[in-house]
Length: 398
Image 1 (cartoon, helix red, strand yellow):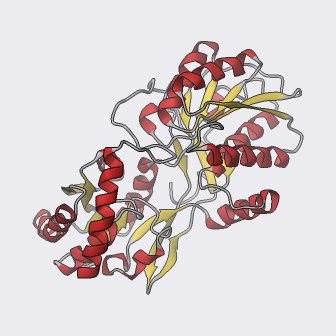
Image 2: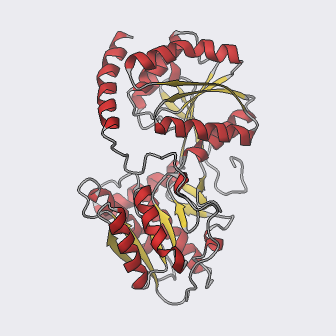
Image 3: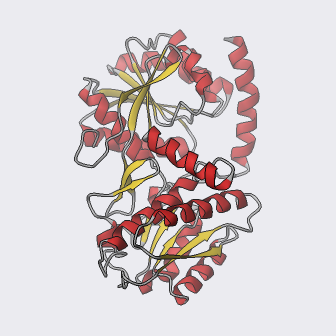
């Protein structure tokens, strides 16, 4: 216990410094401001499906902090183009430099040069600026952000969202007889965003939110909240506890150690994680991890993509690279149908969806996305799949 606290104290101090500096994760820390335009637009440009279709890729090539991600996104897009059979995609790459103003100028330039759809930019706030300038021309933007609050109008987000994960897990929980959840979240913006996603998913799946407990990003704050969570959950009649904390956050080992030690027995309360715990397998040895649930994409498809990428480019892809592949795969599938309206909002949101690097996915009418996810657990320090990722939107899991 004391070793856990010592390691966590150092890591949480670092995390607090990073948070105060306002640094963002590569795919976006969601904001609470609604920048989107409501429902996604149904319009878009007409195309000639028998002619080359110009697709613009907006990535931060000259941003020193994201240039490697930009490279991998472009590589993945080109890998997807090579897969297309009978579809001619002409990829044009534009450098956003990680700037909203530059992205806006490059988006307009891309459309002026014939682009019929835009993939990217990487960050949500930059994507908003890019989408604004081409909205009046009916050009749709498929951003690599995971922030649903920016989606709507001509802007779609391809990144996996908290809402999608929470919905999958609470749907599964309800089918297992778990219907009263307590939420444990950090009191920063990502934690609040995760809490909101769980509350929304609970309502959608007929699960009651029995209690909500937050904690500050400090060792004492995490420890005190974790020590009191058993009493909170018991008083509220909860049968599960949903943790929003990222698996790589220094708070997670503390939560998984201290909560079981203070009465939140994993054999009685179902632990659920909003993020992938398999990216940090060291967590599996903590008492709160045994039997816990979390989600992950279709692993065979994800591994296949990674292997093909590595064979083509000599290195493993960045975790976000698959989003560019998915965007091209969707565009290619629609163009292959021979429709002049293939790149309109109506076509992009087809209910059957598309096959991507992590399995089936589809774009929704509100500009967000839905992805097929597997439900996994931990048994004896090993990950085990409980419910496989659905292969279509007509199967179980949706």
